[in-house]
Length: 275
Image (cartoon, rainbow, N blue to C red; front, side, top):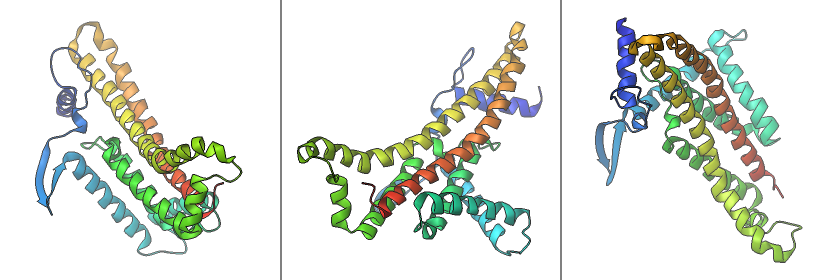
């Protein structure tokens, strides 16, 4: 076995929890050891491997955006073309088509959201990282919280606080006795379900993708090492790991796009009353 294969086997064995026989991957990867701890204004902070991966992905995103836009040309180079294509996708496909006529001013925020999630998702298939920070629920939840605050703020700014909350609490055209049933549902949907499902959708897909990749990779290493006839099935598991990596590429892009599109629909509802 080559040194790289041995390293992969060691990493996967540690992630799986070690032990005799095949060990299914556990949740240990999502709760890594603390690299550093500090306190700020009485609040304790801990830096872990996933935190560092988040920083690296953010730095790469900023470097890409700066490099793609620093020296714009009429005939764009490859990097400028990729950057402009991504921004145009968000500006035209989401800010203009989803948010509506007043959506263009939100294009920079939506593009930043899209690229931030995309670069962090991409870390799921980067060697030595091999996990997306978005597969830890806290990170998508923070993003959803930011989007929720903006969604409420824009609704109040565009419609006025009275009209905005009135349209949510008391739907036009609904018989007054039905407000007893409808109003709690609308409160739950607009102020709890939307941000929660926004976070869960991104988290669940990246979490599941990471677990599938680990299962097939760990299975391949185990089958190659265990001997007997199991070695026959090792290539199948290795092939599935490769196939799932390419599938994960699609999920990486799709989840960044879906999260941004959903935020666009929420902004559209804030700018123009939904009911």
